[in-house]
Image (cartoon, rainbow, N blue to C red; front, side, top):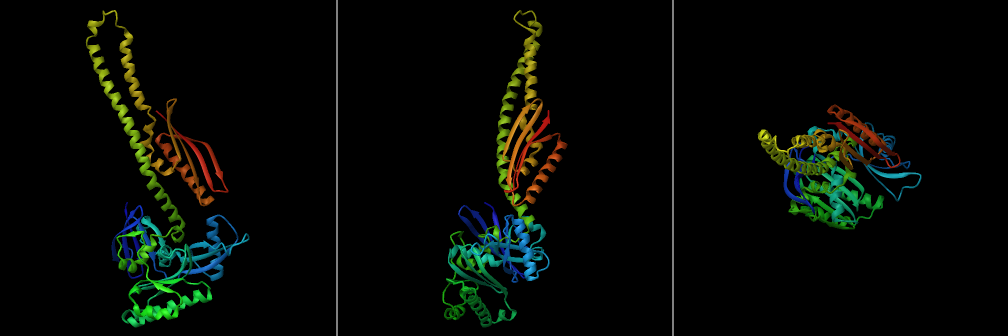
Length: 455
């Protein structure tokens, strides 16, 4: 299992936690404090503090295609809030408010320029990115584990940021983020007052105006040690106050590191629904993850196939040496044997023909095609491969069956596949499409293709 990094980044610095993946979760390795953008690791989970996160409830016509939903939501945000420019969104449907004639979504949005900020996410780190989110959702990653289906107001604060997220189970109900005012950094009482005022305000808004009963408040970041804050909060709220314990998903992590670096822990617990990465980045990541799983399997199959072929070639080579030695002895004593009535001219021809058959079998082995199109086999993600030899040709038949997010993705995949087939024609292969089907309702694509090469 490889090492992954989870970073919580503000404009002035980044908190980073390194993990090892394990079968039952994550093994804590170390925590770091770095400059923004200096976290180049093989797998990067990135949470960036953007306090002006847009939160809006949107109603659109009922459609199934996710890309169409995305377009309609963005248009609705522009019309309702007057947003200009391109925004990256995550959304979740509210089934209790939806109807057959319209769908209702809770939408969170950030400007795309936030993602494109190279001081936070340098271009060369994009290929390592597993998720790009904000701490509003990172807190939810921990809340849904420690609070399960209860409604919790999770508050995280450090020297730069204050984030408050209300969630229940898998659902994020409300969230708010604020920058810590500079004057509080040298005044402990002012810091406590600022935090207390905003927690109380958020709690009242959620409990009274939004009618969301909060079961308890979680305090993390620097707040676990603020006894004065807790004493001020107790009479102003009608629920319990606690600090989250380290979930069992994280091994070898101490409680202090867990609380102070909590967004880093929460981000790795999120699924892709909270990812603000652009769609093209998500598609490339999905392909990269698929290939990372497929390549070891293909490599193993290739090694096994080559091992079998090598073993057969070795046996044939050993046999050919014996035949060559025998042929040499026959030829060297031919003059003495020409009068032997048992000798027939066809005997020598037999050995010559046998050697010719050995050379032919090596040349016509269909597995010889694998090294020539290895890169293509890694890309197509086929469901089935059949190698054969017939009528002087090496033949590879393969089947691809995939379901896509939408018709655009299906069409793009098909065009890329045809383009790659045209490219490998330069290697002496020809292809034909034996059958092809498109299910436009399910966005499913099926094709069976045959590759041939003369030998």
